[in-house]
Image (cartoon, rainbow, N blue to C red; front, side, top):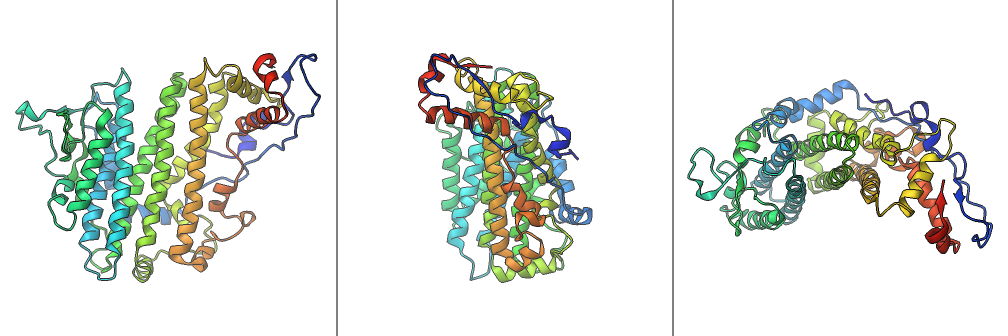
Length: 467
């Protein structure tokens, strides 16, 4: 695993130990104000997965080894976006199955109206992200036209231009799900409007565009073959199906995030800053989607869910400091990759970290924000997108803590050490209370704001000469 002890492995130049200097002519300076002193932030805690037996039990319950084979299968070697879009489409297909499961629930006490609204919203958010990924692919000259599509009038029976195995077209004909499915189909039509092709799920396709070969890419039949859990034969609890589907969707999108983060790293190394920024904003949206998916736990029946937790032997312990979500090794790895984006700041700004701890990176950021933003706006976009990932990720962990407490009760959460203070060793609390991952960018904006707040606007506009 990646070592995240920042103080030990990262040059101290990204932690401003002294104030940056603005080279401003003495004649033009209206006053000699002292700059505020900023204490260098520190990130002392690492994030780690739960105990290996707990992670193995989590993977076994969700059948993740088999799901990963579907994510990693390749049908189109020349299509570079397949490793990203395939798991995204499979998560969407699991959502369709989730809708069918909820509407088939025989329990008379479930809130079907709110369930429908929640799952429709989650499906729509996924379609938005998928459409955004498709748009970005179409705008890139290197990847444009590589997506596997088919026309309605092609007459090729081996590659139909609409899905025959997806659950969504069938949901659109079932009286219980017809309204939800029709609204989702309209969302597909609207969100794919900017793309040269559509998803081929039975949406109106008023423009007559080619359709993605959905069945070949997504493989819905193989996805739905993994809907059962290893404990179905001995657990008679309907929440077993909802929990299983929820976490399969979560894991699929976490995998998409990991592939995007790998592509972001390659784009930064290749100086394709705007492309890296596009993928960063996609990762930000995925963190927001994950938070909304976790909120689905609030819809589950309390007694049935807690009974299922006991049946699955999901228990907290005083010696286990990792939150329940840390049983997902993929989530831990993606979280580390998001945090490690901070190490890319010097490379983006094209400066070297000062081994003596000087504010070299901070000054370069100030110069970019003020004097070079017209010529280096791609870098500004990327830096802003990286900080947006930090915000959405911390928001996810904060929301997860609240959901865990509401669903399982504060006593169980405290047993998992989630309810303790930040100083009590709770890794989940540390995730959203730790200092910013980008101290140099934070300091640059702080000092620039200081100058604007002290009537130095004209100095910045005309006389600033950042060192």
